[in-house]
Length: 166
Image (cartoon, one colour):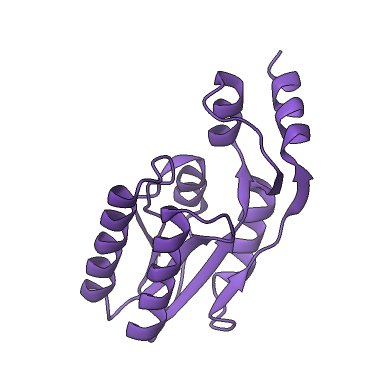
């Protein structure tokens, strides 16, 4: 049975669409969130949409692509609330928490100057994220998995991206 992707956004969504994952049980990957706008109102709306989605899909397995970031923000707050809602209200789920994926999003933001480096970033390549998804997708346990990346000073990531764009 082909796995359904619910509005896969960004580069990760494109990769997930191209994977043609199959599963024995009806399964939906939920990779629908607005990480670019971390305001309280937008993030609350994302959470409310997720709750509605979970309630409408009780008969399917839900694989929720979430975040492993620990930086306090409305984005983190509502992602964690969504995880909790899923755990408390659904029996058949998998939560995959990823750090910052190095891809078009962060690279474009650093190159254009719409994001500035600060502190330490925990990063993961898209290839590694794909391997984790393929490896964990068919497994029922653990129900929640925090995927670790490599911690690098944000200034180093910024310099490498700026250098690579020349």
